[in-house]
Length: 246
Ligand SMILES: Nc1ncnc2c1ncn2[C@@H]1O[C@H](COP(=O)(O)OP(=O)(O)O)[C@@H](O)[C@H]1O
Ligand SMILES: [Mg+2]
Image (cartoon, rainbow, N blue to C red; front, top):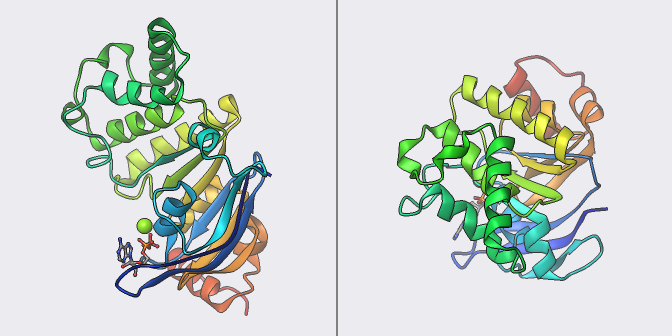
């Protein structure tokens, strides 16, 4: 078990209950897809897992361990919007290098080798280290965001609507790249999206969230072919425009 999340609750100061007792596990190699309508709490869950938002209750364990330092190296996140997630003031080199604060023993030469390797992995040229985010398209920026996440050789990548803001052809390129990266690097994905088609393609397990709760969890094919919860049926019907047996 890579990730164990148990009983997470989070109510924002305004009174919105974004997480209402979320429990889920992710096994090594078993990508988990999380789906649910906008505002149901997906991003809050990702941010609590990453330690960016403090929960009111609940625990997050990496391989049974609560240690946050190792967590920050092993679990990395890619955010939705590549236009805001990359600081425009930093060059590609600085963006990638920042992740190396988590690898204090690495020499400058080793750091540079690592930067070149992640650029190869996301199929970006090696000679862009001195360039800045505004010089790249949305799809290229998302590749850079993924490269940044790969800098610490993570075992789990949390992708929060990572292809949602891209047009469909670019989405497809990134999805294919993620599949290829997974085969080469043996990572596991926690893939969060309201796009059921993309989630179906990338996930082994599916969790369905509504109103801060997980209402359905299971193997991908079981969830798509025989959804147990009426909310899941509604989502599938809306996404694929076909009838699902009651
Ligand atoms: N920082 C915040 N302060 C107050 N309310 C928030 C904050 N972030 C999210 N929310 C609210 O929490 C709920 C869940 O939001 P979010 O986790 O972003 O859902 P999703 O990612 O599924 O769209 C929504 O009602 C949203 O408006
Ligand atoms: Mg979100």
